[in-house]
Structure formats: C-alpha cells, structure tokens
Length: 197
Image (cartoon, rainbow, N blue to C red; front, side, top):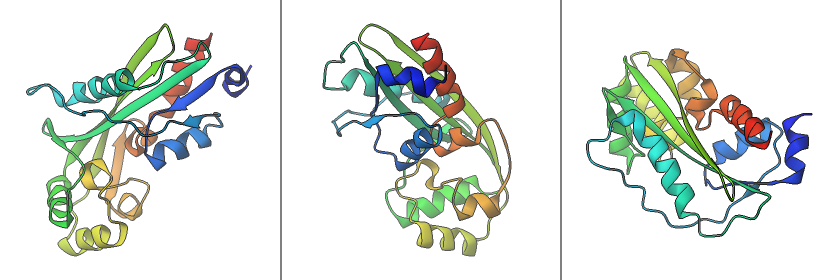
C-alpha cells in the first residue's frame, strides 16, 4: 500500500512556516495539515558542531509544539543549516548580510544539513541528511542581481537552490537536492512508512 493511502488513517502535521517544505510534501503526494505558528527559542549550545545543530533544533521545535498529539497525529518538525568550515550561516538580516554570505560561499564547497523529528503521541524519531554543494565563483554583479531580484532573507545561507542562483551557480551537489531545498523528502518518506508500519 502506498504511504499516502496509509496516512489516510492519520493526521500528518507539518510544523514549519517554510513554503518550500510545504511544496515538497505536496510533491510527494502526502496529505498534511499546516500547524499554526508557535513560539520556540531556536538556540543551541555554544560549541555544538554545525552538523548536530539541525537535529537538536528539530527536536526543540517538536518538544515546543503547544498542543497534545492525538493517537492519530504525526508531527513533523525540521531545521536546515548551511555551514562552511563548520561555521553556520543563518538567515540574512539585511542586504549587506546576504551579499556577505554569498561572497563567503562563492567558489567553495559548503554543507547543507537538515534535521527532522517525527513524533506521535508515544514515539519520536529524529534523523538528519547532509548534502555537499559546490558553488562556482560568482561575480559581485551576479550576487547583487540575485539578492535584489529574489530577496533571499528567509533562506539559510542566503540562497535557494531552486532559484536563479541554483541554475547558474551550482556546479554540482553530493547528496539530496531536496535536502538543500529544506526537507530530505525521500528519507522522510521512508521513515514515515516505517513508523506507520
């Protein structure tokens, strides 16, 4: 039986404001509902390795979900970080920060890690997916065009791989493309299937 059929007996709740994550779940054909926004302090221990931060934050978001889960609920939370040399690049506060981040990524390999937590009323599963992204050297004109046209202020690392910069700037990736968009949907699909049984 397809996972979408199995999920008809459940309510899959996506606790994320990311339009990319919503798009990816729709693309998988998985029925879900969008959680109402809720407050969670997205802080992590100083010195935590960049690769461990996304799972830590995904668990934090799951634990902070304010409503009790019914027996048929499955909550999905996620967090994505972009890291270069184990230094995390968050979402840019303004144009200057966006340009600086893209200059830091230009001509270099960086890593995108997404952590996911799936939780029911009595179980929780967490995992992460890592993708190496190789960005060619970008000119200041290209960086400025991208930032001014696409305003990537809601994106970790100041870019979306599915946008113009991905088409013209990404030389190659090693790992999941959709992970770089913000959700490793193939892994999520498998984990959900195993969770439901």
